[in-house]
Length: 293
Image (cartoon, rainbow, N blue to C red; front, top):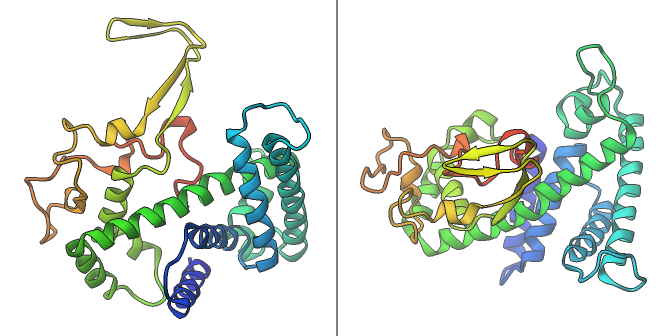
């Protein structure tokens, strides 16, 4: 958290010095720096720039008209970018292991340390090298793209809702320096603003699930293997769940003892639970890998 706090402070200072308009690319680079520092404990700007460029190419392949690797197509370029990302991750794993033995503090507190040195109950390594690389790639995808979108939409909603902005500024002014994890978890206005921004504009609109066995639900039957699409956006804009769902109302997620709490807007939903009425990160076995990040 200390490294992430310092990275954020440096980022904010650079934004202030630059002034003017900041595009989404600025937030993308910031989100990637946060992931990098949380995973590896330090920042390598050249490596981050390389990952950023290849990550954009990789994501662009998701919308390709074909999934065949025809030379020159977005999908072919995306797969090349993915290979370069995995090669970069390979280098990072080697570098991390050479600098941070299993007993070191960084090996214990960083994401990549847990992935590399993690063991099961029988003291066997949990992951192969390829599994480590795939999981880090998934974490970059889960944490980078959605994080920059979350930052952008949150800043937009705060700029459009002065009361929320003022309340957040007042709360943030009371936090310690450096920040602590407990403070962040127990900052009601901060968390309410973030949860309400996600409710209004989920970074992912929906996802898919597959039935592993025959299912029966409300008079309907589904064979094993049936594919389901669930809509996050439909759930978070359901008028039966959220009063005045079209408005940004962070007060709906404040604890009842908070002075700004308003029972008229309270939906009685706890976003930390991540149930079907607030499925921002999915749920169950396949909950979003980037949730904690």
